[in-house]
Length: 216
Image 1 (cartoon, rainbow, N blue to C red):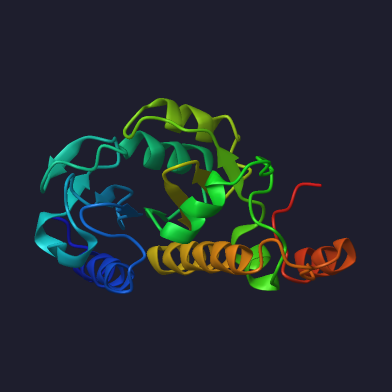
Image 2 (image 1 turned 180 degrees about the horizontal axis):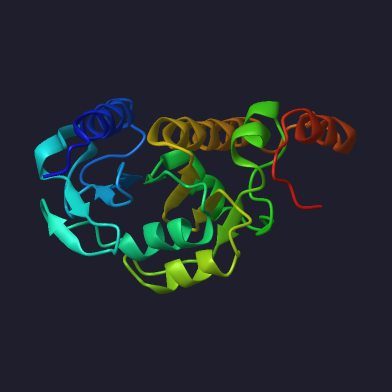
């Protein structure tokens, strides 16, 4: 059994908060975090964010071997791809949040920069979000697609599916994915309107002031 008791409890509390506010429903979504010894704690397959049990989280050792808890989510290739390509990743969270999925269904989305620049906070917390094509749930090709980004993105949107975000820790990852969903909701609310977006100069100012990873 992992000694990361606080981490186990934090993962379950944050997951329940996301569930209770309708950001992922039923048995959708998955979450993982690095343990103090370099292993991973992962939400089990078929589990609900609203009812995660700290003692039953899947536990992996530092070599990637499953050593305790229930069987992990089928989206492990997706999580592993972020940990393998981003050394700063301490947690990964994936949701089936409705507004971001809806935004991914609209035609002519930019696969290199999924979210419109509506507020500084999405830029600060997410950088540019890559829009990935449709994959069957659990398809290892999702992990390959993330690896293809070479660690340059903290967040991706799986078309028709949901967002995936890596953060320095589980709280940061959850905060960032909420920002992604909020921005998608704003985009939908203002879609087709004569909305004002941040200018290139304003984006540059945010990127510079907050040291954001932002490819030109």
